[in-house]
Length: 146
Image (cartoon, rainbow, N blue to C red; front, side, top):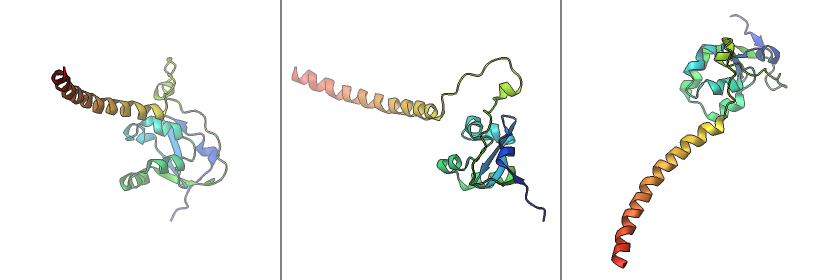
């Protein structure tokens, strides 16, 4: 059996680009470059954690057993610095920046915006029918009282 490759935090921190995205999760390093476009949470989530130990972020989401099984395809080695001080990765380059596009990338709104906008849309969609029903019930009562 071949020896498992050990990847340091310094080496991991070199892989932060859209077209070269590595991250460590629970002591293992994964090359997720080919998974960027297929990630159900979007590539931005992966870009935010590229080049470092992303165990906390991965665990916070609560991935399914299917997600865990899929990860084996992208496994490239063990994280030699698991639990140690991590090297700070360079910011992730977008696909446009990687392709040397002249446009500057707009700043990302972050994950909070990704959650708030759909929640607000759902709340509005639920509140409007309730208001219509209340108005439909109140108008006849007002007519009777007047």
